[in-house]
Structures are given as structure tokens and as C-alpha cells.
Image (cartoon, rainbow, N blue to C red; front, side, top):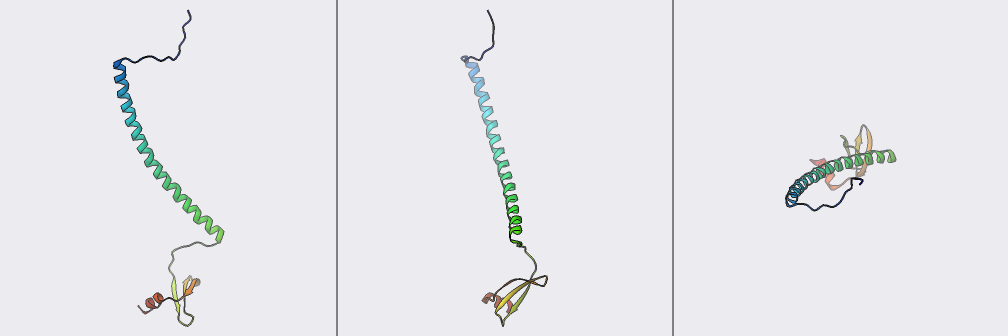
Length: 109
């Protein structure tokens, strides 16, 4: 008679069922912990990816338009005769728009 190894279904004894129940509980707890840890990592990486995508969007927009939006110190020139406000950065007009009531109040203050 030849002997071989093969997987077959075997009925569990009561003690084995109890042991498998304990192992299933432990594995379920580890799985829950792993899922929670994964969600934290996923959120962290999602934030990193979104930050890089936003930065790339800004850079590509600057390349496409030849301009970039920056917060800089500007000199404000109120021209009452022309009823305009000019924002000057390094001596160059970077924005010019009509004078508003709010601008008139700021000029007085």
C-alpha cells in the first residue's frame, strides 16, 4: 500500500472547537487593531498626497500663466482724480482697481 499526504475534512473535537474559538477571538482583535492602524496611516498619507497635488497645481499654474499669487508688502497709491487704487510691489503696479467707499474710509483713518 502506498502512503500519500492529502488535505481532507476532519470533524473537530469539543476541545478543538474551544481552542479554535479562542484563536478566532484573538485574530479578530488583531484584525480590528490592524484596520484601525491602517485607517490612521491612510488618512496621513491621503493628507500628504493632497498637499503634494496642491503644490503641483500651484507650480503648474504658475508655469502656464507666467504668474504666481504671493502675499507681499505693497504700497497703496490712492488716486482720487482717477478714482483708482494701485498696489505697488518693488515699484511696479501689480493691481489697479476702482476706488471703493471702504478705500476712502481707510485713507481717512
